Structure formats: C-alpha cells, structure tokens
Amino acid sequence: MNSSESSNGTTHDTETNDTETNDTDWQTQWLRLLAGPVPTGTFKNVHADFVVHEVLGFAPEPIEKGQHHWLHIEKAGVNTAQVAKNIARFLDIPARNISFSGMKDRFGITRQWFSVELPALAEPDWQECMQTSFADGQVALLEHVRSHRKLRRGVHKANNFNIVLRDISDMALAEERLALVAQSVANYFGEQRFGIDRQNLPQAIDMFAGKRIKNRDLRGILLSSARSWLFNEYLCARIAQHGAALIPGDVFILSGSHSFFTAEEITPELEQRVAEGDVAVSGPLFGDGESLATGQSAEFERNVLGNWPKLQDGLRKARLQQERRPLFIQPANFAWQQLDATSLELTFTLPTGSFATTVLAELGDFNSRERAQFEHRS
Image (tube, rainbow, N blue to C red; front, side):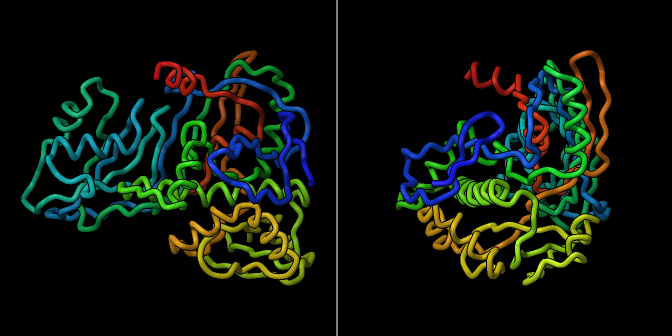
C-alpha cells in the first residue's frame, strides 16, 4: 500500500480500500500542494474577521410589476438557509418561493442576493420583514429590485473575501507561504461540504444502502458531499503521485467557460497555456457515464475512485452526470497586510464553487475560533 504523509503528520493511503462503511475513518487530512513547514493560527475570532461579498457578475433587470423581488442582504451569525426560512415564515409562503445563488456560512459578515416570488400586486414592507424576522439586527436589507426572473442557484460569478488571521505562530513563514499561495492552491472542497465532523458521509452511505431520506434538500446535500469526497480523494492522490504535473489524457477546462478538451499528449504549448491561466487541468466530479479522461490519466482516475465503490454506485444510481472541476486555482486580486505582530489581513477573490478555507489550509493550520465556540455551546 502506498501512503503519503500530509503536512500535519498523518498518512493518506493512495491504493485500494474497498471497505467504506459507517466504520470508515472519514477524518483523512488531504495533502497540500505546497510542501514544507506551515504556521499555525486562528480565524473567525469575531464575525468581522471573515467578510464575504457575493459577486453576481450581472444586475437584476428592474421591472416595475415583476413578481420576483430581489433582495441584497447583509447578514452575520445566520446562514443562508435560515435567512430564506425566516423570510418565508414572515410572508407566509412556501420556502421554495425563496431563491439564492450560493450558500453562505453562518460565521462572518456576508452579502448576497435572494429573490422572492410573490403575486404581482404584493408589495411587502421589506424593512419590517427584516426587523421582525431578525429581531437582534443581524440581517439588513441593502437593496430591493423587482424583476421578472428568479435568481437561479450557482449563477453568481465569484466571491470577494476579506479575512483576518490572528495568533500567527511564525509571521515570516506565513508571509513566505503567502507568496506561494498567491500563485496556486489545491482546489479542494471545503470542510463545510461534509457537515460537522464529516457526518454527511456516513449518512450518504446509509442512503445509498437503501435508507429513505424524505427531505429532498438533505438528499441533495448528501449526494454533493459524496461527490465532493471523491474529488478531494482524487486530488490528494494526484498531488501525492504527480504534484501539479500534467498527465497524458488529462481533461482541460477553458478559462471562464464550461468547455472541455482532452489532451492525449502534453506539449510545451499546453503547459504554457496552463501556466498563463488560459486553461486549467481538471479532475472528476463523479457521476453516471464515461469520464472524458483517456490513457494514463483515465487509468489513474479509475484506480483512485475505485477505492470507493459504494459511493460510485450510489452516485450512478442517482443519475448525477459526469462533470469536471479545476484541480488547482489561482486566487485573484490576492493581497495581504500585517496588522500587528501576530495578525494578518488577506483579501482575494475566488470563482463560484471554490472555498476560502482551502486557501487558508494551503497557507497553514488555522483553526476557526467561532466555530469551535459554537460547537462547544451546542
């Protein structure tokens, strides 16, 4: 069995483990792209230390009698789903009438858009809705636009982050790694995708074994967790055996699009396009159908994903289609400044679907103070 040591000293097996069950150790620590010692520290000490602004990339079209009310909201200490639920309760409408593009965590200060479908003549008092639904003032309405279209899931372009890291153990080492992180990071799915203590994964195994999950949203969450786990396992194995190197048969995504192509041969021209950000090498988002990878890349993909037959079978039966995701990303507009002897402020932009926590994980071992406090209280 091949094992690679992660940056925190744990090992990650890269060959077959066909015994995934609810007894499986789901606490794997995935390898960093950047080797070497790392600093430690904390983040999310207070809400203001973790600020996220959703970037739609377009403006809602104002229609005076539009039935979709677009709400630009700033929130703190409450997650996206709870905001939608509270608004639906105030308006006495089904939760399905509330739409949003991205899920935002309860920790931090975040800005994002929601849309609410109502009859054409309805005109709620939105300020009263915010004040009544969120009496402690942790949600504020920034803008209201009536439009003729609903906000669809996943349509926003990016997220802007402003993050303060505190209690940094080695500032010189942190700044050394920041210069590297600015160039490229492994595009892992963040821990949020797997639930507290990664409990979504054994639930997914139960669901695939026949346990009925009545809640449609929960089923979707579990499917997403299972597929994200397979991607992270693939990316970790890829780093362990190949680093950031390209493999014949890899699938590449054209920057800023959903277009793909497979490269049977890795040429200097292709390597240059990757270095310039014109294209990105991708990994599998597993589902039904054949992978686009060929040759050596396809064989590597089969070997890694073959470690998890129950997850594969469950995703096939759910009829999720094969998709691709960039293995590595370069954070845009990446900058930092030292606030004091042990604190840094980071600003950067990530495309939709990428996680700020994976950028922090590439930088070092940073623990969320606010999450730890919440879990202790609960």
